[in-house]
Length: 66
Image 1 (spheres, rainbow, N blue to C red):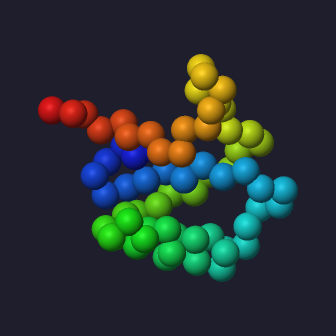
Image 2: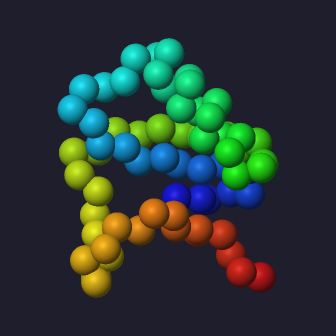
């Protein structure tokens, strides 16, 4: 979920919490992959909600379209 131009909240579901090294590596790889150095914030969840149509929303931008 994107709340700012430079930051993305990454919601993850895992069986065990990742190690600090794994979190750092994910932030390195995913933060640079779109071609812009996004700051990533990881948060752990038991499950991810689905949209009204039953699908997962891969990316949600909460930025204003002004």
